[in-house]
Image 1 (cartoon, rainbow, N blue to C red):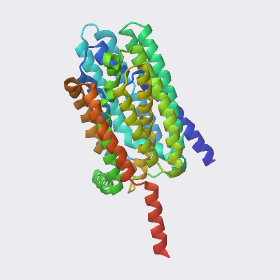
Image 2: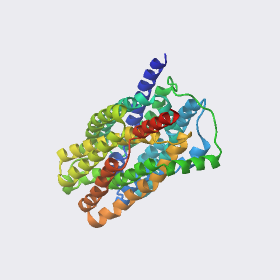
Image 3: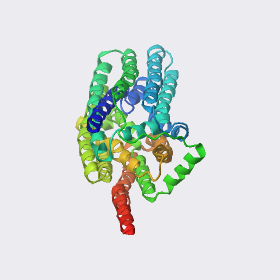
Image 4: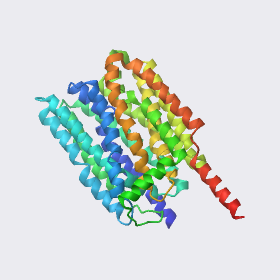
Length: 424
């Protein structure tokens, strides 16, 4: 019975994540939003960089508060479902309204409203993320979580590819501003609809019902940050985040003569290539993670990020865009599958929501600052020199994982062996 429930959890989670990705893909933060802000509304590189900065900072900083206010216990599934239905629809509909009614007369105000509403949507994600990730982790046993995440990653990629295809054809077939307004209405609808898939799911880990006071949560923050291997994991993530600076500017780059002067429709379709890379990379990382540990997937993801940036740097044209987005799709899959599981498995105490929040809180400044700095840097020195500079921390992050970060399961097995030896 428990096995059937976990199988139901795996498929419910996979379908839900896929439909969410379809909704988010219609307003993609790496293709649709940059092209809208800069290409259609006359924005600057700084504003394009703000998209990634908002995505990072607004996801991570609210977790400081939510980990103290919302932890875990009976009934959290329905709280999470209702929260998503209420919080994640209104910002997309607001962006659609701003595009449809304001973009022709006041593009500056339209850009401001889009960035603000996108920030509210992302803050909503950040606030709920620790308890959401803790709940998702509780839907699967440790030995099957990697495969479960690999399936959800495949669904995310497939639905994301469909969204990219639909977004590309919508922007080409329907005049502005109706095309982008339709896409954003679709985003709001599908990010709400996806939550139905989680209704049949149920936790397979024991459900604990306790609430820690803020002082105890802060103590667990400190316990997490004192854990040496967790420190090394965070250091590697910071390096890789620094290397991701040019990611938000790839769509704009491929539209310039240096990138091949490609059409908006072609660039948005690169989302399909990102999908293929995410599916293949995620499948490999998930199965390797279940068998030998998720450190292996983190290494693969870092290498894929390096290759993706290198290809975009060295070669213009559609073939370059396909290869670059495919590699970066695989690198993105590593964040969801490998790094997320390493985050779960490095928790040294009884409050995983606090541990998740502590890790994301430490990464937030890097995730927010580097995209903001990248825009002015590209304005001053150009896309190519900035991307070359970002290859350095990408390589350092990869070598740091290889040389310094330890596989959490190996550490736990050693601890259990020492305990058994001491008992004898």
